[in-house]
Structure formats: structure tokens, C-alpha cells
Length: 119
Image (cartoon, rainbow, N blue to C red; front, top):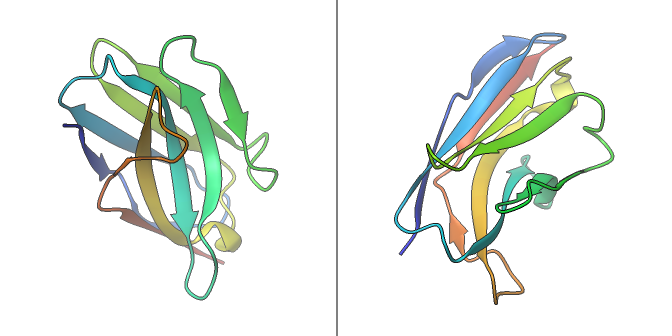
């Protein structure tokens, strides 16, 4: 069983930076990739960034390319989302998620952390 715990959210001003981290408890050998997702009020959940656990291959949503960076530390079992040049549109609850090797969907989700960017 995998459990995910996010932290690092908060209130920042436009243009600021913020770092989110996701701590993984449980076995990671069955994880294919990790992702950060976000959901703003009244909007659908969107994928922000993903990273494969083994090779570290990354992918980003169009709205955050060039501003956000995802990384993982296999030894520490953490996934980090570095967010730069934040905009008010980045305001959302951010979730960490893990997908198993044989899964089509993300199986494990954290509780979410609120990020609020003021203009």
C-alpha cells in the first residue's frame, strides 16, 4: 500500500516561487510514475507535471511549461514540484498521485495542499 503526503502549499504573491513536496510511504518498486495534479474551484482537475519513477522522464501541462519543474528522489522517496513565476491562475488545490506499473489510472492520491497566488 502506498500513501502520499503533500506539503508546502500556502499563500504567495504573483511572481513568487513555491516548492511542493510529496512524501511516499510504503513500497515504491511497483510505481511507474508520479504526478502533480491541480483543481481550482469550478474547474476540472488537470495534470500539472508527471515523472517516471525509474528513468525520471518528465512531462508538463502547457500552462506550466517553463515555469514548473518536477523531480524525484528515489532514496528519500519524495517528489518535488518547484513552481516559479506563479500566477493567480495557478491558484488551486494541488495533489500528488502515483500510478502503478500495470495501471491505466493513478491509483494513489494525497490529501491535497492549497496554493493561493494573489495578484
